Image 1 (cartoon, rainbow, N blue to C red):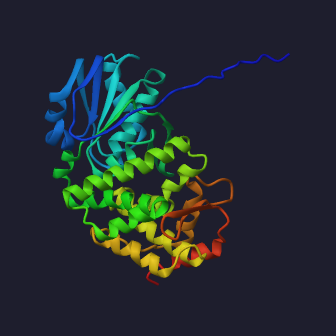
Image 2: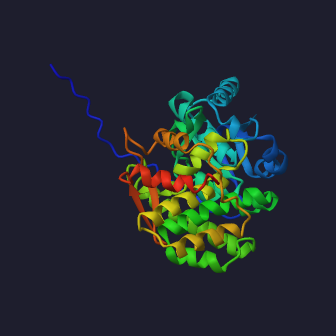
Image 3: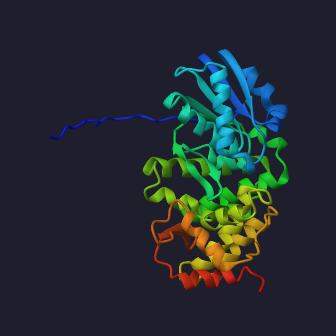
Length: 349
């Protein structure tokens, strides 16, 4: 005997991404704002001034990638239960990429899923992390290995929040902008070569280009079954660096920048990129004082950590490699000795 359940349906998870000054946000039920002490001290008053809701609660978690854990998620969920949120409530993730990832993940779990919106306050989260619905936390095995796809109801990108951003955080965001230009838009990369993103008008243009690129990729491949994996250029190597340094030494975008350098070397070795193009990417990243030369202590250990990457399957490691400038190759056929040869160049040995 066979009993079938027919669940064919059309789900519309479309949402707007607003770029500009934060406008009025209205919600008929309870609202919980998840943030950290730094963002709250700098910007919470701005958000509260435009937020109109029945009740508003604040949930504050520590600042830093090392707190992006299941323990912090449990703390957030406990506070949501304390405030008696329900399925008509809203969670606002107000902060950088860590807050956005954890806020979205907590929203996906609470009562089997409630609505949330993203209000990113760092350049990295504005151009990348807040768009696309990828949520999650880290564990001892690696980066973002526990999580869910849970799309926000809206994203509000207010560039004025970036005026208080430390220089390192700014550079980390630039790395994600460069990542998208190298893999998807040669013209945009060439524009980045000749424009300084520390100038406000140029920054606004870059944010718009990056968000548009991310949005089109997510539309084509929401659950990262193909094309969306290309947005992980630099991340396969970068996540290993984060894991080895326990998420305390470098910012996420800094690890992505170093990972891009390793990926470029590999792309050059397999004939996808020229040495001149490798240097052009390096020159753009160097302009924003990003660290680019990580020292690998143990090549074999570094290589084995690749297998924990979400894109890898069984014994095949998936690498995201630039194809010249403006193109990308997703491959799991790179010979292990070729990869290790590249890694040895970063041992200083």
